[in-house]
Structure formats: structure tokens, C-alpha cells
Amino acid sequence: MEIKRIQASEWQLIVRLFDQYRVFYKQESDLTLAEHFIRERLNNNESVIYVAMANDRAIGFTQLYPKYSSVRVIKNWILNDLFVDTEYRKQGIGAKLIEKAAEFAKTGGSAFIQLETAVDNYTAQSLYEGMGFIKQAPDEEYYLYKLSLN
Image (cartoon, rainbow, N blue to C red; front, side, top):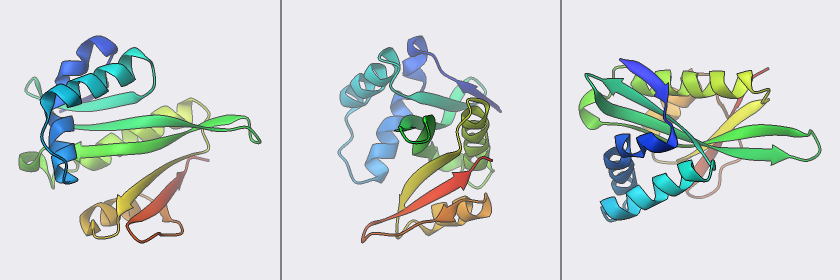
């Protein structure tokens, strides 16, 4: 398995997975919408996407968005999307994608990455907490987690 950052010209690698990710969160499947959204993020340099590849097939991805702090004069990252194809779960791929995202953010001088997950997504919560993320104040639907990179 290889984890690599995709370029704007490689958008097609994750459209199927991005659509499945949205379906997981109870959205209608729409490959055209998924393609448009991913292409726009990449073409406008609005996100960073890492993909896990196995046998020339995309099997997982994570998408990060920048989060700026004027006071600290720093760019941190929101790990907004993390998804692994169902047949490849429980193999550590999600953890490897998170590690790659954290390495990227730390190399760029970020102090932390943060993410949110549904309060009933116990599998994800276990993964995040096992990797050192600290749970922040919850709301009714989501928990906010931060991973310090210092």
C-alpha cells in the first residue's frame, strides 16, 4: 500500500470514495456532484488530499482544509474527511492516512490538526483517541478532537 498526496490532475482517484463517504453521512449518491466538489477544491488549492493506493486502486483518503490563526500567525489544519473502503477497514489504513496528514501539517509548521466526528461514531473515536487526539467540548451531534503536533 502507498499513501500519496494527489494533485489537481488526479482528482478522479477519489471521486468514488468521496461519494461513498457522503453516502455514509446519509447524503444521496451523486458522482457528478462529488467530481465537481473535489475538482474545485484541488483546482483552487483549497484542500490537501492524501489517498491510500493498493494494486493501482484508491482504497481510502483524507482531505484537509487550512485553518488560520491571526493571533498565532500560523496555519493549522482541519482533517475534514477520512474514509476507507469497507473491504479494507480494520487494516490500519485510516491510521496511516492520519499519520501522513499529521506529518504534512507538522512539516509545514502547524501546531495542531483538528477534526470532528459524530457522537455515535465509536469506531472513529477509538481510532482518534488511540492516536493521541484529545476530545474537546462536544455539541449534540459531534465531538471536536485536536492532535498537538509540538
